[in-house]
Amino acid sequence: QLQLQESGPGLVKPSETLSLTCTVSGDSISNTNYYWGWIRQPPGKGLEWIGSIYYSGYTYYNPSLKSRVTISVDMSKNRFSLKLSSVTAADTAVYYCARLRYSGNDYAIFDYWGQGTLVTVSS
Amino acid sequence: DIQMTQSPSTLSASVGDRVTITCRASQSISRWLAWYQQKPGKAPNLLIYKASSLESGVPSRFSGSGSGTEFTLTISSLQPDDFATYYCQQYNSYSWTFGQGTKVEIK
Image (cartoon, rainbow over all chains, first blue to last red; front, side, top):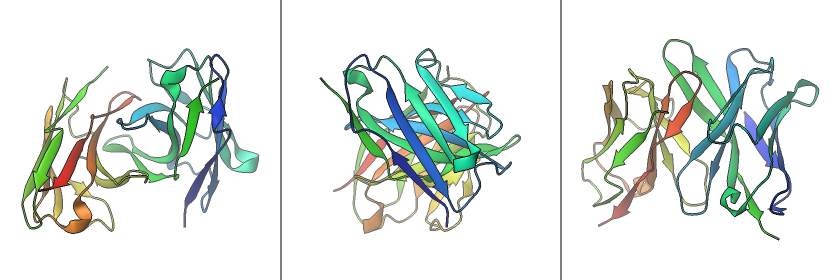
């Protein structure tokens, strides 16, 4: 049974860097059939894709966040990570990690999600 | 960037009703469209992908249709467990966008 678990600080100060890790169990992060991604949801609002990564290190970022986002993968620990720099209150959200099932011809969908972790940006 | 617009934003319905939610893309996305259900405090759950393919384990009362710029999610007979928020999601050139969501409420 595939499981994804987000971890990291729940409170980050403005202007600092938000760092989260997603630990994957039940599948290998180097499975060539999948990518991995981060999505966030501000309280009471909709979903926003942050970025995605392939095990080889190829990354794809939301253009609106690209200048502040870094996603990386650690195959030895079967996990991937998110760093978001220069955070403001607008970055307060529930952050989800997810598995991305991708077919070059048909679909690119988030089929398994972590439970999400609330990160609050406040001094 | 491709924008996704869902309508309505909120929908009030009764158990047993047929419910339809629409999602429009700002440009053609062929059939690169998925639908998710989200309940309060929970992660989204994949329902439909490739516009009309039902994800394994999802009840058959859920169906999707459309291509290009206009898509629909239909619940043929609304069940108590279906009261939730629904999101569409598009994929284009290694970029993903979600609609703003449609909340299905009890009438």
